[in-house]
Amino acid sequence: MSTQPTNDAFVVYDHVQKSYDGQSLVVKDLNLTIGKGEFLTMLGPSGSGKTTCLMMLAGFETATSGEIRLDGKNINDVPPHKRGIGMVFQNYALFPHMTVGENLSFPLEVRSLGKSEREDRVTRALDMVQMGQFRNRRPAQLSGGQQQRIALARALVFDPKLVLMDEPLGALDKQLREHMQFEIKALHERLGITVVYVTHDQGEALTMSDRVAVFNDGRIQQLAPPADLYERPENSFVASFIGENNKLPGRIEKLEGGKALVRLANGELIDATAVNIRENGQETLVSIRPERVEFKPEMMPPGAHTIDAEVLDVVYMGDILRTRLRVAESTNFVMKSRNTLGQTRLSAGQKIKIGWHPQDARALDPV
Ligand code: ADP
Image (cartoon, rainbow, N blue to C red; front, side):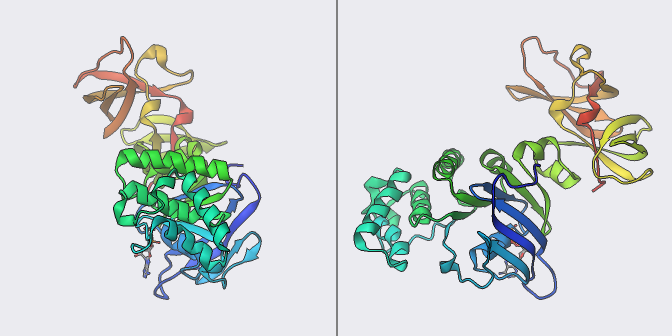
């Protein structure tokens, strides 16, 4: 089951709620189980409650109600430094007056490890992030990317079983960011640690995670592996938040065995997969990914539904052609076609028929 962790339960949020002002809940009845060794990302727009969830797990915020368990133990009353959790944040929070080596040694001193053990562990952690030669520098003598590597090494130096990361790559430029994503993922796989990662960047979430919890308005909207989130969004929020998506408004005409017959705004009827709709007459948004739309008859999938469309404009994007269409009164319907050899070039004003497999049309909630 996609919503289950891949391994034994390690972190459990059990009916967790959080209010800062005693009135409004910024985290609403969170139930989430994270498996041992899993890379789980909390993804969502700003203000959706991700950081609050992470901070409650770290111990810097307390849950207003509910229980958080780590390795089977209720940790609600355990202070942060006794939770054995490594942490990396966007602002590296390295101590400026200490060298890199001293920064890494600090969490070990706090844990009363002896000098030679500390030295060994610092060496190992620096090697992990390929920063061994920078041991005697101070943070100000390092680039942003290097500082973030040190912050990562510091989070790993005491061998935590769980590492929390909150937008750790937010301050880095795109290229470095992608490189660090790769490094963090490789470290996760090599060390077998459990990672809970917070980001608002869907690309980052999709490339790194085993599962992604999509947050909005203090609730998990969907919890699934990356491909499922993209291919099988369970509601309109997730369909819009993850990737590009066409939305055709309509009304449910017939609902039967997981299939929906939908009447679109122009009166036309189309078949769709019923996802989270309940009854006939209900309004719906039919979601169709742009790359699942086809206009060449010979390329139509078997059982495809075809519908009239008018080309509004075509944007050349190198590897793909992005065609904006008028479809059933919607003027923002996008079709993406691969720019293959001999691809038919469409032009504005052209009337065409487009089609898609009914499975790729998902009748979702109207908002
Ligand atoms: P995200 O990480 O998804 O951006 P946050 O968990 O930071 O979301 O915030 C969720 C909501 O809680 C927001 O409305 C935010 O303004 C509010 N909030 C966050 N931290 C505090 C705080 N320390 N005091 C009061 N309100 C807060």
